Image (cartoon, rainbow, N blue to C red; front, side, top):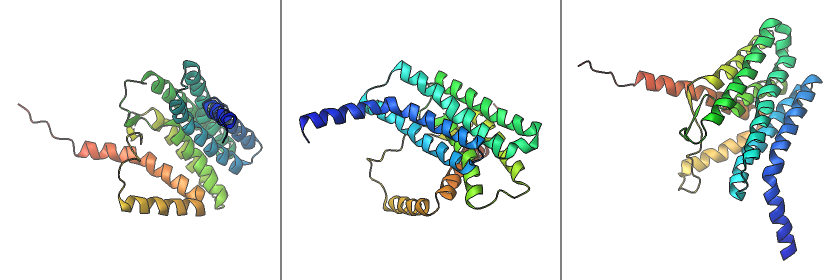
Length: 247
């Protein structure tokens, strides 16, 4: 590769953090449009694609040393639209509209929960324990809603009479989980450079094969397990909390 080509490659790499938040925002806008057109499967897939862009944004910015106050503010506003407004609107158009007041109330609970979650996250930057999230992160909450939409279309569950109530429960649960004080593992203390046990590598291979064969089932199952993990760990700590001996 010549010097000129390397220069263009470096410039393109540096521009990546600038392009990723708008790309994520466009994907969620696309999800809303597809939801309004009742193409709910496309909307759900677009939400997951936007999650990938959002996950890459911060890492690429740190890698290229291109972080800025403007980028942080733009990313936060983009996240509110991406993880707050879009999933709630898609869920409402998909199944919650038929439930009347309960439907739009559940959608609002989710949207408000995302706003409060992001506001709390911004105020805790630099002082919170990076190993844990307080409340489920908004991308994981969006994955719960989008995953339910995707898996129901993939396996033909849309005609189930109980599905609107399942959608209401998932949407409200995701919204409340974002503002709870339950701790969820952030995966930030996971270092891939360390020696990895063979069984862990084997598990990764199995998960990749499952994902390739059944993407909606694997993604939905992972985020459901992640959402439950925080509550199960909180219950475990409560049950195994040392008793205080009275003096």
